[in-house]
Image 1: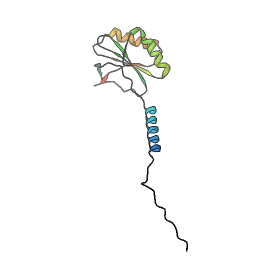
Image 2 (image 1 turned 90 degrees about the horizontal axis):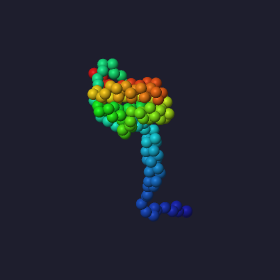
Image 3 (image 1 turned 120 degrees about the vertical axis):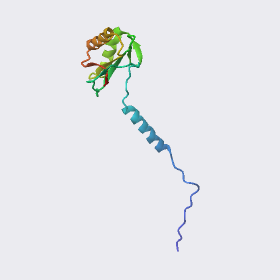
Image 4 (image 1 turned 90 degrees about the vertical axis):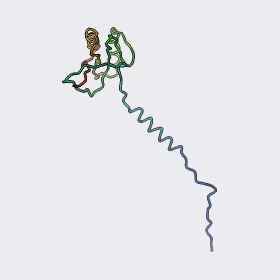
Length: 134
């Protein structure tokens, strides 16, 4: 008779964590790359209210105007004269984007109109003023 030999394990079974960690890092990279980031103006403003305010769904370029007349874009202070160049740069990255001017309700109307004018001169097709819905 032939006897079958039994194999005995030399020690405890080990679980290789390398492939699992690779998968976790690949998922992390995937979510980081596919995330869309919300751009902020860099200033807290008190927007005026309007009954006809509507939410814009497509990508937008945000420009903030404080009650003192300071202009903000992408969390930094910019001069009114450089609004056009900044909007042109943003439009080169996203040509279909609209511009939203987030102006404080106590801001100077002349500054807001100047910002809107500079946005239109930069080639922005849709320039809106942000308002909160009543």
